[in-house]
Image 1 (spheres, rainbow over the protein chains, first blue to last red):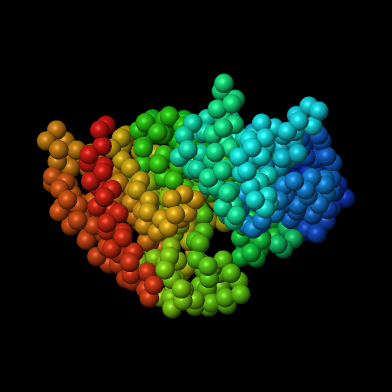
Image 2 (tube, rainbow over the protein chains, first blue to last red):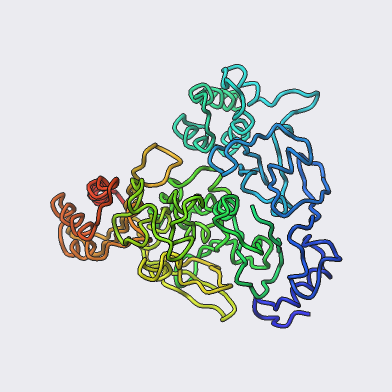
Length: 200
Length: 326
């Protein structure tokens, strides 16, 4: 079906036919795939398969749905919080393939194929808290707690990536997670402590 | 957000006028939520069968950075860190860790202005959003707006950091599109305000950046100095990307200067560069270069401080670059 084998470009017809045959990436329901793109109703629900906390979820979502809204509203994992919903506050931070990302700026459709981990996925065997969660409690690293799941997801990555060696590098790594209660000093303490305990 | 069709393919199709490419999403999804961007189609580039767009490689023409390499990966890459310190620093000083993990290098270059009147559609006047509608910032709250390269049609600031490092060193972007491949000097990618504020770049419909080429020569004596309202996770109020080559006697053989946070588009200060060639870089010489760099600056009602701040930032950056041990 591909008309220009050498180049990256296909014409629209070949593209859509290829999609229907390949079906590797959900585009729309099979019935919605026509010869012209106009046949796809953008308000359709699109099938999406997500890997969250080592579990696979099959859902049908509006293309506008963010990963954050899927986690909270469709899967029921409400630990991840919605703060600004514009990628500025970090409350919605989750891990994608081990790296911190903002779930509010990630389309659910674009999160397919990635290993997503949320605050709920940090819990170990026998519901034991993650060492970073324990450190946050030990150091009183939160007040209202709303930003805390995002803070902890960033904190875990901060330690994992070796950015927790110095207080300055912790502060830099964590600067995308805002805390309006200003628990920042205790958050840095908690991360430094969790990192030190892991080393020893 | 308005409804759209999401496309994710290994090969690209013809692109309609109402389509947008999606890479990291940190600009596009944000602006779609604000209804500043209303694409009918969103084409996710992450599944394209283009391994070269995900790699950083050494080529004969210089280091090539794939368009879809994340800012975080580029910031940690040794090929860049050793020879192009100014680029590594511009990346590490930008955004937050989460955004650096998501945002791509080409998307970073194409990020849109943070002008609040552009980002809020309740302001009816914005020549970037609605050509011919006017500029709300011209006589509005314009503390963060541009003093260089702007006009009464638009006083928005180009917000990026990496672009300043790239334009200073003189890199190129590789593109592909319906008309085939081409290479564009990065300094010619962004259009001047006189072309119309809504026409920001010279990319054609359906054309996308596939790679970024750094110049073959190294710029070890280079740095990015960023001044901002808070220490981290903030856009530049003023910044300077500086690269120098000094000869054995310490005189300047090559000087590269770009200015961030103060200009309408990525801004290379060519005349200021020329003033330093074959001279010894004294504080007075750096100050004279800063005067030249801001000679055309035009202050607005709230951003006059940027002229003094921009000059001081450049002077400091030049003197620090001179004293680097490389």
